[in-house]
Image (cartoon, rainbow over all chains, first blue to last red; front, side, top):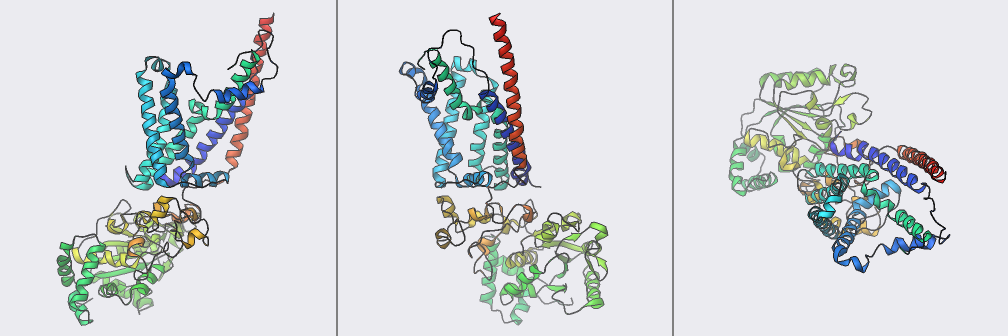
Length: 217
Length: 354
């Protein structure tokens, strides 16, 4: 069995098993957690509107914090759009998802995907520099932040190397690329990358709780 | 085997002109990625080349490799080159049969001990003492060991001899293995393909004739000059891949326009061979040009690498049952964790109320 066969076969199967089991474990566990006890009379019994509002209101930083957060917010958007283009609009990736879930959509030309990949890597590097040079951010950063950064960077980097034929024979670099994706899938449910799943329910829960307390969040 | 004439002399006898010969030398040098300055040296070396003895052993195979070599190149100058090695033993091509054939092999081995080229096509069965394929009552394993002992070098022609091929595909009922798993003390060149490109086989032989040694090899013992680049990198449909234009079926608009066949299972990106440059049927075309994706036939284990029509980027694991089970287990652990948390929280709330 070659490295590529291993990456496409058993390694993929086991990483998906861990990804699915871990994700459902965390998601179901989080969704079923009991609401905190009210310490005073609830200001509102209907909390749906507050939940939905917060999901969207958190997409834009408040003006008061612009000077401190604008760079991170813009870089965050660029990073996430870059990642989305790289992951979901590259035709071989779409075919992978099609093989897994039976759904597909049109891809875009490879040079656009490569451009998005370059932008993604540059943004990741910029955000890491910011994390390591801002005293407060550095202080609150844990190993999880750095591991999640590496787990995000490696698949993009190795994917571009495979496409550009850098770093060794194509099938070896391709195998390494797939293995880095699998490492990311294994890490995904247990680290901060899980925000990709939790961002909507956590914001909604926060908004609902705030509305119950009469706070506009 | 008593032939003393040089290749140039024999070509002249066959009516090949000096111009034709030099064109062949230029083509050979180009095919082997040698510089144009090497053409006179190629010509000089080939002119002086004597006929080496070649013993061709066919084991677990379909004769496709021999068919490829003989049918595709019979009228060409490469064919003449091949005609001018001394092919002393070959089941399909030799006139002799039975004891006479085996006698010819013994004689060639004795006369050229240590100097002859051994060409093998087909894999070798090892299970049950190799009884699944025998020639004149001799197992393939015994014959290979015997003939390889006196060979200057071995050329494993075809994917079966080079990597095990179809006979070695799961479940491999005969315990088939490639030549390289049995012979460890001789230089081995793998010329894989199902079948290999004729000009690649004759090119390796021409290299041996010209330089008296085997060509530079890659990690899988394939001549780098022919197997140095992937089909994908030299494919004329590559620009369509880069532009994201793919045929979705074999008869859609994309297929008619000659778009990339990646979605239809083309294995070109991980297949190293000269199909896209040397082509087949005297340079007419190659599978992708004929509208079918590459099946990766020159790569080890290509039969077991998933469906020929499955896109390369698709996973090759068996079923989704394990993943479905994982979903159930994950959800169950999540429910259990939440129940535990709720119970602890309720207990804490009761304590606070008291």
